[in-house]
Length: 242
Image 1: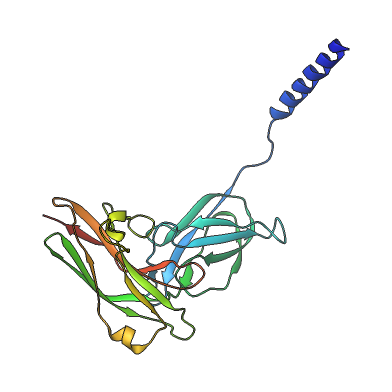
Image 2: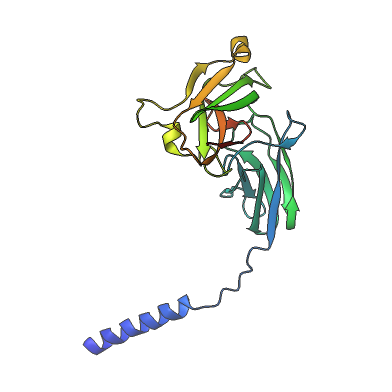
């Protein structure tokens, strides 16, 4: 009986080993998808974002009527690319960003397919300027709303500082956004619906205690109270601290 039991175990082991070493004959990914996110309020220049600040949602309709979505994260320069996709018919939608919702498009992705998307940001940072006072970075700006009707409540504006040009909410030195000697983050609370007083106001953001002899990269972001709470950004500026 014991010999029979051992024989069964050996047989199961060999069977499982064989099944694990079978050759995968399924073809691999054979297509790619790339494009630009265009800001319709800025001469269709690239949308100002950060790594993953926008997600390109892909649903492969040729595979299923209710496919599991996959996502391509945006690059900081407002482009996106994924070269490891399967050819097929897709529904594609930019999501999870600081812009008004856009309608999905359906298209065939074969080979390397290119498609651009036009986005309208919730808010624009205008009249942006910066200066250095000692070791304190001072950034001034105003806000504009391309579309005011139905605009979600504006939450706040925050500074972001890094030692590389890749700077934003996902890439910032925490001590400058959340100073250790303060009881709350370094930000400007707005918590208001859009009105003319917001458009007329000049906001001043200060980032103190930058390390001397270093080069930093900084920008300002402002967000609204939608589902994603992502930031609309200013340009990135280089700051050299003597």
